[in-house]
Image (cartoon, rainbow, N blue to C red):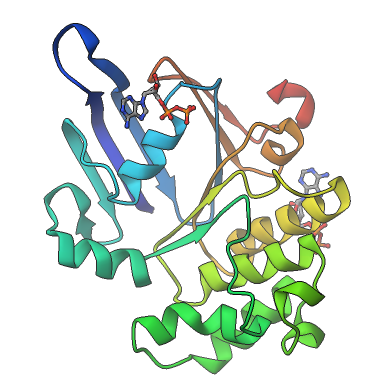
Length: 232
Ligand code: ADP
Ligand code: ADP
């Protein structure tokens, strides 16, 4: 089942002689139970694709659906709501609130959406991410890898249709990166989540079920069950 998909997705910036086609007729399916890596050189359209999936950028043409929602037709207010509970975000720089504990950071999206914490799901996520004994720590008391795992738990706490991760291991040493990637993979394999991550790191991409390669705004290649060697 595709939890999120895009059809004939085209995004142009500017008009006339200075127009740039950031995405050119791209089709993407992000399926349940699949971790998808998005790779490609700088300027190939990765960020634009993520922004279109998140409803942060309006495509010039084409359709984007996340969960049950046609993002391309949604009004601003509903898009904001979708981003709060229907999507989870993981950033390169963690973006945790320094004054809140790990637990408070993880449940923050629910507070903002004024939704109750589903304790069983919260426990499952915390267990999977290996943070049980770190819940009362603040970000400053955690390693980079632990902070990113808190950020991953925060992205999953609402059971979003789709988690979007932008270079989730870009600020981590290779051991911490492995822990974060192992968790993202398990969140897909064992918790049934759907995750898409932009990465430049072939080892990170090797954790994915599928790699999409963008080049000049087009889907240039798709690789199933990659290894670090096949990605390179
Ligand atoms: P990537 O994330 O793969 O580096 P981007 O999606 O950021 O690629 O960019 C794709 C193309 O769109 C590039 O040529 C970039 O210069 C252009 N672009 C991205 N954002 C804007 C913008 N806001 N205005 C004009 N051009 C943009
Ligand atoms: P476990 O499943 O024992 O908790 P990990 O947390 O290390 O193991 O990994 C979670 C999942 O990530 C594994 O089931 C596997 O699919 C994938 N994985 C682990 N290590 C690698 C690796 N080096 N390269 C690619 N995928 C890996």
